Length: 360
Image 1 (cartoon, rainbow, N blue to C red):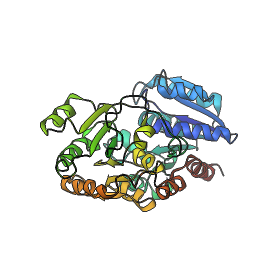
Image 2: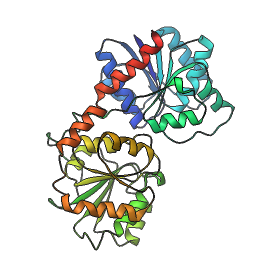
Image 3: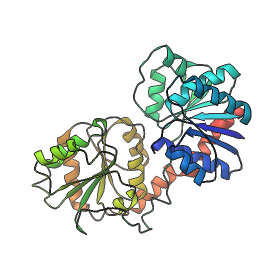
Image 4: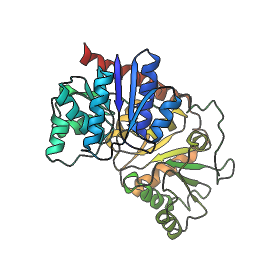
C-alpha cells in the first residue's frame, strides 16, 4: 500500500509522535510511505533519521495556494492509496486536493476535543464527501465529531500509542537536567506544556491545601513554559517555593517518572493524554480529572479520578496517596494493562484496518 502522511508544525508534539510511530511501523510492514511535513521542523529531522522518505514544505497558512500546489504535485508523483492527514491546515488543503483529483483515500486523524469554530470553510472540512474516514483518538473525540455533523459511519476510534520500550520501569534511565528533590522523598509530578486548559494553576491551589497535612510531599511541574513568571509568582504567593519545583521543558520524562510517587493530570479538556498513558506504562499511579477522555482511560487502566476544576477534590486525592506513595511505584498490573491498550503495534494494526476498509 502507498501511504502518505501529511501535517504542518515545526515543534514536536503528540500528533507528530503518533505520525512517526505510524510511518515507521508501516514502513517496517513493507508499505511504501511518504511523510510530508513542515520544512525545518522537528518531524522532518526525526523522520529522516529514521530512514523514512520525507518531503518538506512550508504550509504557511490554512489556504496557502503554493502549499496546495505542492501537495498536488506530490499526489501526482507518489500516487498514494491513502493520504492520512494529522493537523488542521493539512486537513483543509488535502480536502481541496482530493476534490480536484477525485481521490477516494483521504483519512483525517482527530486528536483534540475542542469544538472548531464553524464557518463555510469548516463546513467543507468536516462534512466533505472527500473524507472517507475520521480516526478519533478516543470515544470522547468521536462524540465531538458527531456533534459537529460528521456521520457516525465515517468515524473509527483508534487509541494513540506510547512507546512501551522507552517507558519501561525495568530500564533505569538517567536524568538530563536538575532533579530538585532529595532521594526517597515523595514526589507528585505533572508533565504538560503550561496553559490554562491543563490545570497547572488549579494544581498549585490544591497543593497549598496539602502543605500542612503532608509536609514531605514535593510537587514537580515539567513542560514548555512551566518555568514561566506567572507560575513562579503563583508559587511564591502561596508560599510554596520550597515545595513546588518548576522545571520548564524536559526530554527526560521517563527518568522523572521513575523518581515520582505518582503523577497528576489536571486538564479541563483533552483528547487522550499522553502523559497519563506514559505514567501507566511506567507503573506509576495517576491522579486525573474526570473529563471524558480520562474516564475512558480509566475504564481500561485504573486511575484515581477527581472532580474536574474542583481543587478540594484534587487535594483529597493527593492526600489519599500518602499511605502508598512508595508502594505504588512500578506497579506491574498498571504496566501490563497499559501495554495491552496503548502499544505502538496495537495502534498500527487498528489504523491499517481503517485503511483496508477504504481500499477493499
